[in-house]
Structure formats: C-alpha cells, structure tokens
Length: 76
Image 1 (cartoon, rainbow, N blue to C red):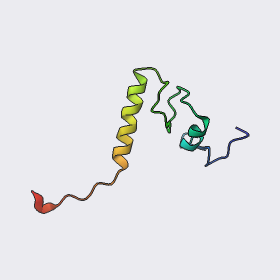
Image 2: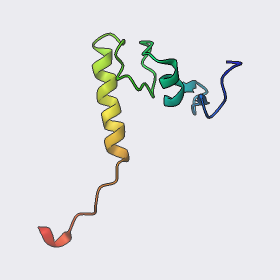
Image 3: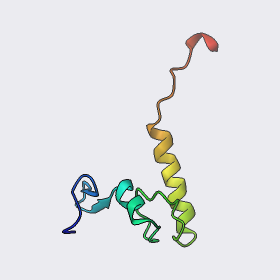
C-alpha cells in the first residue's frame, strides 16, 4: 500500500475495509476475481454464481442512485 494514494487509488469503507477505486483497477488492467466493488471489468474472473450475484447487486445500486423525473400527477 506504500505506492497507493488514498482517495485516488483507494479509500476506507465505513467498516474499515480498503476499497480500491475504479481508476486504480483500470490502471491495473485486469479483473483479479475477488469481486471488487468498483470492478470495471464486469467481474470477468469471478466464478459463478457469485459473478451473477455481483452484477445484479451493481445494477440495483446504479438504479437506486439514478434520478428519475417526477411523475406527472395529471397523467393518471
């Protein structure tokens, strides 16, 4: 961890875990198969069924953070 820069390459989660950033993982150049939170390689080397589970969870996270336009009350 001596060569890594906090906030650029990693950060600490609320539980104290080291979380590698997408930028760091992209620079590394491959999926390590550990199921990293910010894996930019769609968990290519993570074995099934865990890979599918991680992809599903990522999709849920992305969908929950995207803004959706307010519903038109007169549309009903």
